[in-house]
Every structure is written in C-alpha cells, then in structure tokens.
Image (cartoon, rainbow, N blue to C red):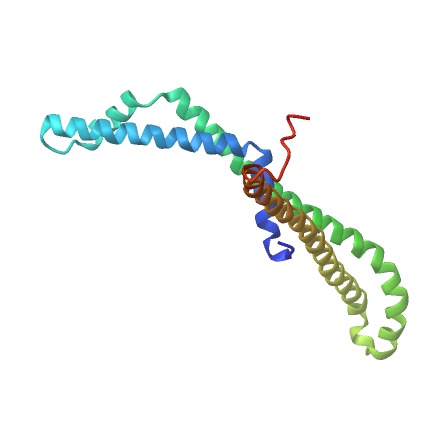
Length: 191
C-alpha cells in the first residue's frame, strides 16, 4: 500500500469518489435496469411475433421502454465521474511540470556560474555557442527528474495513507461484529 506505482490509480479513485462516484455507481445500476427491461420487452415482442424483429423495431422498443430523464441523469453522472478523473490526473501532471519549471529556473543561474567557466575552458571556440543551451537543457532535465521524484514520494505517502485507511476500515467492519457477538466489546450506545 506504500508504493509509488499505484499513485495514478489512487489519484483517479479519489477523483472518482469526490466527483460523485456513488452517483455514478447508482447511474450504472439504472442503466443496467433499463437494459434488462429492454431485453425482456424485446424477448416478449419476438415471442408474440414469432420471429426476430428488425433494428428499427428494436429502436422503437427502446424508445417506448426506457425513461429518457433517467437515462439523461445517468449519462450526466457518468460523464461527471469520468471528467473528474481526467481533471485530477491532468492537474497532477500540470502541477509537476510547473514544479519542474520552477526548480529549473532557480537552478540555472547557479549552474551557469559553476559550470560555464569550466565548459568554456574545455570547449573549442567553434562550439562555445552550445554551452548556454546545454546548461539550460541539463538544468531542465535535472529539475524534471527531481520534480517527478518528489511527486512520486508525495503520491506514495498519499497512497499509503489511503491503503492504510482501506485496511483499517475493513478490519473494523470485520472484527467489530465478532467482538460484539462474543461480548468482548461494550456496546457504545449503552454509555
């Protein structure tokens, strides 16, 4: 539960939950109920007719069977959940890139003072115009690697906390009824 490998999953899961994940699950259930109703109505219609219906008949059956408002609400909720995930992942990426840019801007003057004199001394005159871009690029590469490493550490801690909460809640949900049945725990409502 404390690995940076799963950080994107936990970021997506948190975004899904905060953007109405419970509503999305209910919406999926509504869509499933409507699909079952359409399949049952289609089966009844084909039994009455004695043959398979055309695609046009099936579309008419869907339009008669399902509630358009319920479908609309379900699609809206699913869309909101998906967009919450996309925005959270894009935001984390954008935040890390901005952090890398900031680190690079602060690292560049120091690197230029430290590395430029040595680079000028060992670089032939016809290639000296490449020293400044090489230092700038090196600073960007180092800053990007550092920013991603810091973001991975931050995300690892967050996923560790989220994983620990999942384990502790599951353990409590499992153990509390057992302890109550065996009278090893006082009922908190009595106090």
